[in-house]
Length: 267
Length: 267
Image (tube, rainbow over all chains, first blue to last red):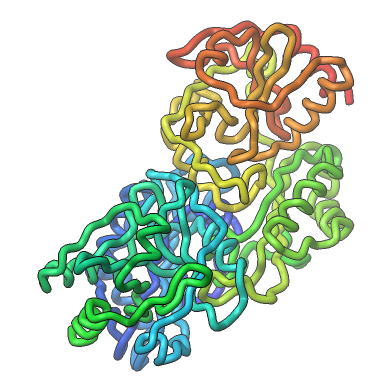
C-alpha cells in the first residue's frame, strides 16, 4: 500500500477521510500491471474532486504509483482513495493537502457461471436517499451500501437491488443495473443518487456503437418484472446477467446481454 | 490520541471507518478531566452501534481511556470514534473487531458575545437527503455537512441552517435548532435526517422540568420567520440565540432562551 507515495499501511487518525468520509475512491481492474479504463477512472475522479472542491492529484503521479504497486501482477484489484487530507475538528474544509492512498488486493474468486448462466439477486428494503450534490460520485460516504449489503448473507444471492424513496430501481449495492425491453437498453437515472459506474459508461458507449438505443430513466417494479433481459455490471466482473430476482421473476440470459458481454471482452 | 487503547496517531488504511465512513462518533466537553453528559453520550453511541450492528465497546473502557487522555485538563474537547474495524474490499460487514479512537483537542475560542448577544446565521442551499435508517445518528458519513459548511467562509456567520427536500428546517451544520413561538418550544423532527444532539436532548428535558411545552415537528420558512425566539445548541457551546437569519429576519435574545441558558449553566 502507498500513502502519499510512501510505502505504508496506516494513515493519520485526523484524516478527514476517516472523520467525515470526506473523499472519493476508484476500484480498478489491473491486468499485467496496467489499469483498465484508466482515462475513464481519471475523468470520474477529476469530476468528483471538482464537485467536492478537493485538489485532484496529477493523474500521471497516480498512474506511476499504481505501476509501482502492481508491477508484475497478472490480475489484481487496485483501489485509489483521495481524501481532503488532514483536519482537526469542524466541518469547514481547510487548506490541507489531499491524501492519496493506493491499495492492491488479490483478484476476487468470481464464479465463472455468474457471467454465463446469470445470477440470483434480491430487492433491498433500504431506500437510497436523494442527494443531487453527491449523486454519481464514488465518495467515501457508503453507509447506505453497507446497510443494504448487510440485509442478506446467503452466498447464492449475488447482489441486492436498490430503490429510491419513490420505488424506482437505481443500481445494485456494488454494481449498476441495466434492463432490455423490446430492443431498448435502459439503466437507472443517477440524478439524485447512485454511482456513475465506469462499466456502466463503457456499456452505454458500446451500445451506441452497436446501434442499440439506450436510455437513462426511472425503472419501476412493473417494468423490471416485465423486462426481456436484465444484467448488472461493474469494473471488476464486467456483465452478469440476472436470471432471477427473488420474489419477482425469472429471466433468460438474452442476446443483448451476451452481445455486450462479448463486445466488452474483445476490447 | 489513543487507538484501541494504545497511544498512536495513525490507524490502518484498511479500516472501514475510512473506506466507507462505517462508524460513529461523539464530541464531548471535558471539564476538569471529566466528560459532561457522559451517560447520554454512551446511550447515543450504544443506540448507534445497535442500529449499525457494530459491537459497542464497554463504556467503562471508553471512560478510562478518556480519563487517561484528558487527565488534568481544565477544559478540552474530546472525540470518540468507533468504527466497524478492519475490512478488505466489499461492503459486506465481516467479523472484525471495532476500532476505537479517542482524541483530545484544545477548547475552541468561542466569542463570549455569541451566547449573550446572539449570532448571525444563514440558510444553506444544500438540502439534506432522507434516510430514516441513519436519521439521528452521529455517523461518519458527513459529506452533506462538509458541503453545507463550505457554502460560506464569512467568520461573522456562526452557522448555516439545513433544510430537507421539502424545505423543512431540520438543524444546523454543527448544531440543533430550536424555535420559540407563543411560549411553545419547537425543534426539527429527526425522523428522516439530522443528528440527535446531546444538548438538544438536555434542553428538551429541562424544558419539561420547567413546564415549557416542547414539540418536535417540521418547521417551515414562514414559521421560522415569525418565531418569537430562535437558538442553536450543541454540546460544546451550549445555547447561542440567533439574532439574525440572513435574508429572512431579525430576532431578540428572548426570555425562554435565556432561562434555558441559565438552567443549563447551573447544572
